Length: 439
Ligand code: SAM
Ligand code: SF4
Image (cartoon, rainbow, N blue to C red; front, side, top):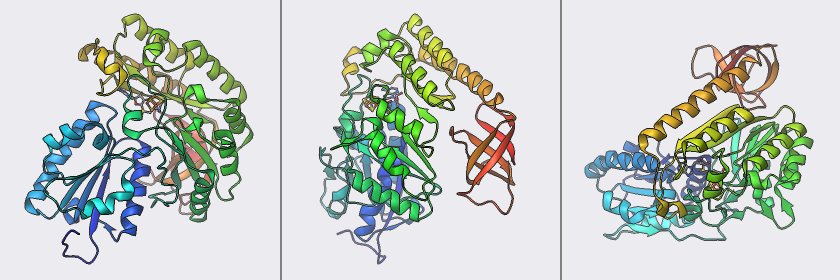
């Protein structure tokens, strides 16, 4: 075991990347708590520092390498300090990583968290490495230590079987597996008992969830029956798995909120085919039409990649046309980043950095315009807002989310607490938020 001056070793965890990683950090915290570790709030106070990393784009990896160099200073001052890397980057490129950061003590992939106490006990000269992927690991028996406020993220499914040609997720997170519904429901009941009002079900293709006879529509209906849970969301659904069962559950269950993050990636059939996304623009637009007819209040957001290998100006124009046709409420857009191990890796990178930058700027500018238009059209309307806490900007204001997952800010009054749902009438809007008064 590591030699420590305190009775309980302290661990400092830092999380990069998506909500799945945030949820994984909560599982890691629970594993380490059971093994006798407590949490440090600053790296300077910790006996163990763990970075839970993201490998989705090169930029994400560069950030972590930079951070590791900063932390190496602490390690020089205190050689007994253990420094470890968890998650997708650990899985993706461990050799390069260990060459760039030879002072690492530990490298553990997303299926190795159960073994962390053992790995931390390793005292050899070489770092402890465990990047075995495990088709059966769902951590279903482990209750994560949620950092939840009014909203909690519950993992419904791990891994991904879709193998989109640009994406590293299936290689770093392994094959798709669903958490048994009983384990999900146990977490949801415990969270509701703690006062959590909103549950977000998580998975890389969360709507492909299936465990024996329970599909994702059935899971949504089960979660909706839990008293105390007021709102249910999920992310990210894949367009191909948007079955009638899921759409019907969304329409039938008032707790399932009218908001969907439905990644499209591109508006060109040629590019969608090269990405192996499994749908065409027509399929996607049909789905959007069906969703909007069934759930009239629905807000939509998406992910867009610009500059995928082979993306011509005409393909990009098709993406812009699709954005206009759908009219998303918001969009996350990324420059294509070639990732080792993926199928598109060997194709190369035909669009220059400069051109990717230009296309990205155009997507962002268009989305800002559409978001602003949508939000301005809401002025005068009223929405039930789940209060989260003080607004980031502007003292004396509270912030929360509308059913459509739009941020609403309004004047603070002593009577209102996080977790309350208040009716807000919108008085002004930007592309990113709504401002109003309680009515
Ligand atoms: N599973 C989700 C889906 O298929 O819709 C997405 C998960 S991924 C963590 C989040 C987003 O990152 C993707 O939707 C995609 O837009 C983006 N992304 C993934 N790989 C990328 C790459 N190589 N370069 C740029 N963006 C990428
Ligand atoms: Fe990656 Fe595609 Fe799986 Fe999403 S569905 S995680 S983009 S492989």
